Length: 203
Image (cartoon, rainbow, N blue to C red):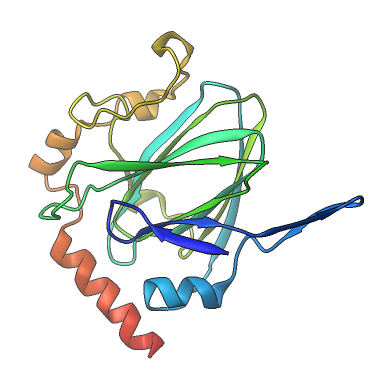
């Protein structure tokens, strides 16, 4: 597999090598050792999630308190989604910026999103099926959101706005500026300290 760091530090695009014949296709969509080489520590996986979404569904921007927050390794097993990583770490050199990866059933890419980063995706097809490996169980009081339609962030969903379907939870979420002002967001310093602690445990 090929692993490429995205423009948001601590996020990566993973492109697997696929082996096809007249029976079908085989691939490795997750390799803990290859990812460890890229990020500096092994993932301690705690939960696996799956979502199925209609075309136009937007899920996110979601994040969890750090530590421990929740690192995510995400792929689409059916259909297609445009997956976003958003830097919400106050003090980061790329704070407020984002990058995206097309996850679909053809190239079968995955995205790794470190703890403390925001995550969002939009379904580009019906029955878009997304699977997530995560490093901490869901903990509702520590889970938060930023409005995915925040114009200051400016996510490009590639679909007409009238086609987008969002939950009230996401549309009621604060803007990035509001979340920062209220102290809701993680900081660059706290994220780096947490990554360093994970790296030291892995060595």
